[in-house]
Length: 138
Image 1: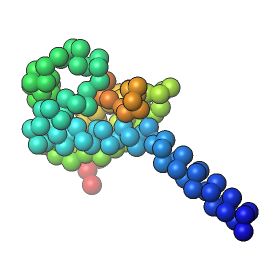
Image 2 (image 1 turned 90 degrees about the horizontal axis):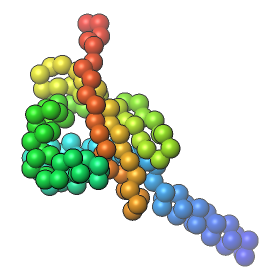
Image 3 (image 1 turned 180 degrees about the horizontal axis):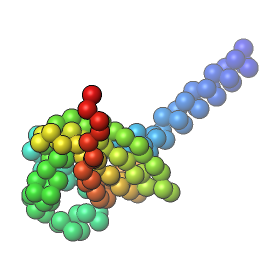
């Protein structure tokens, strides 16, 4: 009975430890998804909350940040559809591709850089947009 209890306790502790340490890539995808949703809902405050301290230093006002996104990142601001592509960990940073079907019918790839914060969260530190070359017709 004592051995079975010890094994059960070890399993509970191991599972608890696993849950406490979320996968950085999964966390990054969640942050990206939430920020895109905030853009779609015109929620400048929520969208700005996912920006890293470095981005906030460049755009100290959320309204200015939001206007910059509207002008320079229209395909993130109003995506048609999007899906996650490849991801890469570089140290603690996450590089994540997001494949976007733009409202204009063109395909884009957004390459996100997310950096860890002292509280364990991840914030978006930059995005590079690249127009994707069209593939063969189906």
